Image (spheres, helix red, strand yellow):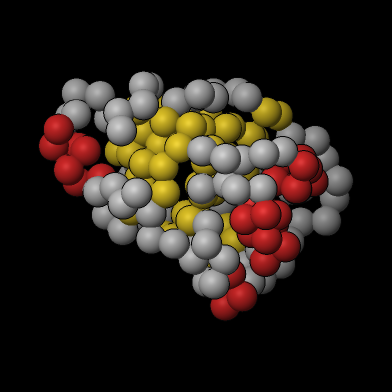
Length: 159
């Protein structure tokens, strides 16, 4: 189903939060929507790998907050895991890599930009917590809708 965030903003203006400018889609589809899963990473993406590789993502969008160091947390391998487990999309308050290879993987991937290196130290992340970035609060179980115009979040499913 194709969604248009502009139409949703018009129809549900009192229910939507709009993610600030600066996030670009590097994935293989132009839009996504679904129930939010939240994860906060501390330099390392091992917890995100486990989530994308081991859990069913049908109807889900993963929202990832990352410490502000300049490194990538999602690339070709994680996008393949996301696709294999039916995730609709990933929104990252951080960076991605392997952008040439991931354009054919049918998962949306919104991020601040690109970086060719990944973070090596193994650290733990936190799941199912409230995240806040880009002027939006993301809670586990909220709904996210994204397209070429932007990313919006609602507390309740609206479509």
